[in-house]
Picture 1 (cartoon, rainbow, N blue to C red):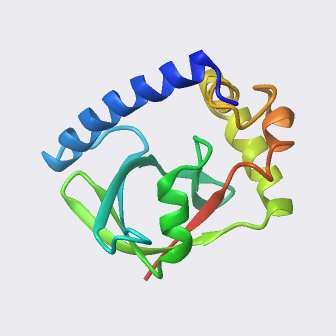
Picture 2: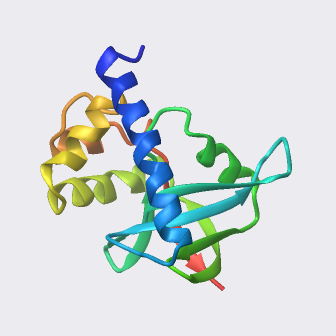
Picture 3: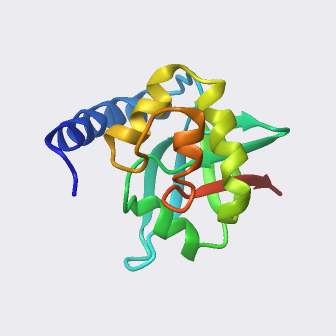
Length: 150
């Protein structure tokens, strides 16, 4: 069950996401943020989500930040997505990483990122502790996708 702080965090994130989308659409790129556009699995309409693309272990990865994230279900049903950074777009395939292979990636993400990254997984209810090992232990609840271009 989500806590009040998780609900508050989700509302705040939705507000910031709208700002990120507007800035990206205006051609302003920053940090690891990109726009992920994918066909809706039920509606067939294009859906756009701001996401972080993280470079780790020689690859580029996208990590689920919220339980039941709509983009995760849409990506699982899609053959390809569009990633947009500023005014540059490219088609990509997102390959879901098996649970056992997610653990080292999640550990590395949290170990090499600001503490807020580990805390986010706890705030949203995906992990029990914000440490690299604590987030890695939640690999069965956190979808991870490798970005493959071409």
